[in-house]
Amino acid sequence: MEKQILIVGGGIGGLAAALACSRADWPVQLLERTHEFGEVGAGIQLGPNVVRILYRWGLADALKQAAAFPEMLRVRSAASGEELGRLRLGERARARYGAPYATIHRADLHKLLLDAVQQQADVQLHLGLWLESFVDTGFGVQAKVLDGPFLEAQALVGADGLWSTVRHLLLKDEKPRVTGHLAYRALIAQRDLPAYLRSQQVTVWLGPDLHVVQYPVRRGHWLNVVAIVHGEVKGNVHDWDHATHGSDLQAAMGSACNRLQDLIGAIPDWRQWGLCDRAPMAGAHEQAQGCVALLGDAAHPMRPYMAQGAGMAIEDAACLQRMLALSDLPMVQRLQQYANERWKRNARVQARSIRNGEIFHAKGLVRWGRDASMRLLGERILDVPWLYRG
Image 1: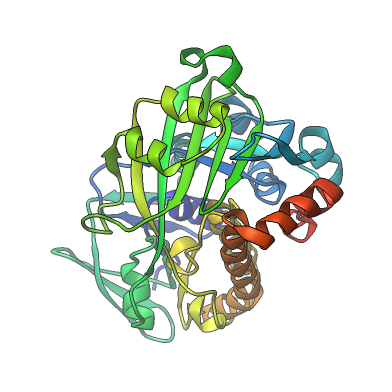
Image 2: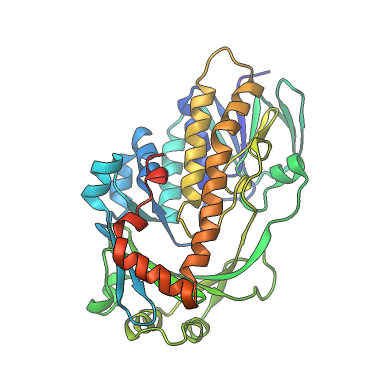
């Protein structure tokens, strides 16, 4: 069998995996079911744990040209506008964790990775191909493409997202669960906002049953805004990118302070979708079995309340690179080590993300305790050393 890795999925996780495998001297065949590469959505936050990996992959200059690097994260009350706490980013993150905190448009991160992958001579990208089935022979994988040929590889990596075909075939488990939270996302040029609404920082607004996050992208020229409220999906949960007006969101804001209401009202175009996830991983078997591995949302979809969904996919890819670089080990053992190394950390981030959502949206005494603790301890609560150190 020819030495190669087969990757299913051409999103951020799949491209990161392709780059990582290539850097470990493994040729790659990547299958993407759409007919053109692209990424939808809005912004992504990249903690120092993720930026360090991108730097190691030689992407520091490309990231600098595409991202923003906020100096501060501020947490405010959605009701009063009062600052509850702050976390210094910028130089503090560089000194403490070896890399800055970055914010970037999803499409820009996707393009950055795609450009890097296309420079690798041993990576072949195939558009419009849909994985139908696969067989793990114990020595490799034989994969059948819908209306296409069988492909052979030493390993199959499922990086095909929340509704992963590879996961379904491998684990035969339940569908992702609907969380009851709705996300509204928007991007707007800073020049189109009144001066008092422009920002080069990360700001998190906390309110009962809701929160809003805003941060700069595209070198600070654009502002990304994400508002998450409680509600049910109208229509097909798979159709996650609904065009919507801000009126529903403004109504959900209730008695939010004027500044936050002004920000929501200043943005004409919003996208809305229902958030889905899975329970935190229960074991290494959910990350890899035999010659098949899962990566990113295919393995551990998570709520966005730690801003680490893309980050954990990129960490998965970096770990996969290390395992593939090992010599004289059967592929099954390499992937087992990959799974052993990744699943507990991914499960921890999943669980912490669920907990953060409860804290962000707290009411009553829990909300009072949260605000008091943040005022008193500030940076000690907001910093996450176990996460950012990798």
